Length: 447
Image 1 (tube, rainbow, N blue to C red):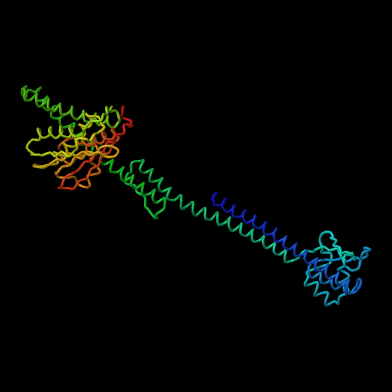
Image 2 (image 1 turned 180 degrees about the horizontal axis):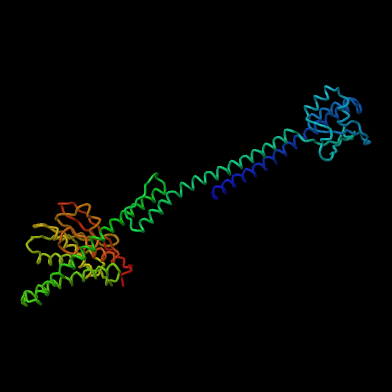
């Protein structure tokens, strides 16, 4: 409202300035016209003096009446300063009908003249024959023009002010209504009601804000559901080995299970499983907290890819997975060798799990303008489109194998290098994980 009133005030101020300029110019114009009329009357009096060889009362009275029609009240005096004729005397010499007609046309009433008389000399052939004293009386048309200008300006100011207040109320309500709804929805979200959504109308900035809020609420709802699932999975992963160990130990104490080597090996296996879970969680927490100290060096990528392929080929089991390496000897990568190996091992492990039997895993590397690109492609089952946004979330998994921490650790390690990881997949055709690592070492995890 203040802004609109300020704009209205600017408009009114501009109108005031324009009005003053117009009235000033109009006054100058009328003054110029009145000066011209004085010179017309002076010329008429000088001509009458020349024609009559002196001052003729009848002729001067006619000129005085004519001057009255021009808005001028006159007094004509000779060279001795004796009064020859004035407006009042000239009116008395007219017939009543003529006098009334002239007075009505001129809008003149006795004693309506304003200001002092101004003297104008009269000359004939270079010789002064007397002088004419004039003063102007108010003209109704000029007064009417000024009064109408002031009235129009006042009406405009009132209309603009009223419109500003009305528009400010309408716009303020229109602006604050969606903001109020947004505030209420935000309160609902803060209280745990993640199903709250905003109704979107229009396509302005507030509608864009509402879209962003709804996307945020939807993401929070998905994250909350995933977090519950993560907690359930983590509890399940911890509960299973603990329950097995507890049952075996209680059975041994009760004498139901013999204290044999195979029982101890089973307990050790479950203990190692617990240790592996704790280790993976600790590693993920360290990566998320950016506590990893990276010893980045530039090293050739191809030998590292060949080493990974050889390691999995020797321990590939009965899946008959074959590896293909596509990388030039000149391709370099700026990374921590141990962490990069961990990234590749996790990606290849997932690729092997996705292949039933007889598949192929392709490891490729290529130099880019600002870094290095690494692709891990497999011909496995692929990933469903609905699962693609979730595969990097902690403990997310589609089967019972693994903890669902491999890809989250990969993402954190790639982020620690200042890089990016992307995935594309077609169900039944395989997946492709693309890792881009920059050469620039200006990263908060770099030593």
